[in-house]
Image (cartoon, rainbow, N blue to C red):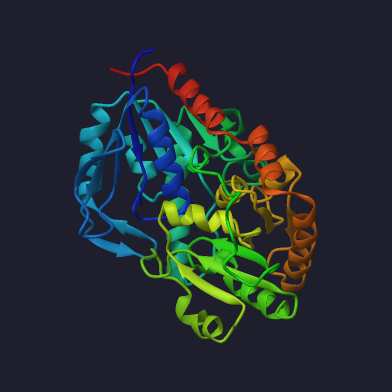
Length: 378
């Protein structure tokens, strides 16, 4: 098979942790086995290298002039794109991205656009203007794209942004970075009180993740022998976190533990230990929630908001429980249902059922087929 030169473009990449960055990292690692892969992203932390080769692919990080809420302005980002795209066969743009429209106009190479999520029109006037500007830019990129990858048909068919591009869309189930990692949890012993149900959350501490709803639900379940572990970055987050708003509630709650940011080995132990994975997201910034399939790889029962895309893992596997977004009572009820399900389903059963619907082989085949079908421009 001919090796293709693939340029993957996104605003933030590892070691910045988000659903988009982890998706792109898994994509780069998968495609680099049979292609030449380069990543173009921003230099989001000054201690990072501007050019770095890891895991079979090369990362180019552009210097940032200044930041705008979750985004940034970088003239070097544009310059590097022009340079790298000329030496690529395929360009893969990860949206939302403010620069996506301009970038699509600056290349003649075929574009695969990976559409991660809609942008919610919330916040200040400045934030809303930024969202509208990004949407306008994305429309240009989507028009010029040869194909548009979405994480689920459920999400894409409910998107007002994507409704005009249905013929170009292909749903490819997202990756599971931890699929091939250690999954032996037979000797694991719980670190909490015996027989306590451990509910875990993994994600950035931002408003759309529904952390405030989770904390309120935890407070209502103090007498139910259920503990809550919250893992994720709450310091280095584009646009800021809500940690300052919820810190006092975390300190004063005996059944909630803030674990913080976890690297992969610790994250695997976290997934092995928890019984239930919580994803109480509240708006369309959440389009799937890959942490669900990561946690299910280690036997966790998912509880997620009943929203397009977010519910896909539960509906496709038949394992887990859905709750109404932003509803404390609905989340409490779903957690109680998950507690009953935990008694019936052992962790190996959950894992085996998951891999019938979601696998990295399906993810890689989906992308590689798209790339192979493109007529590249010289």
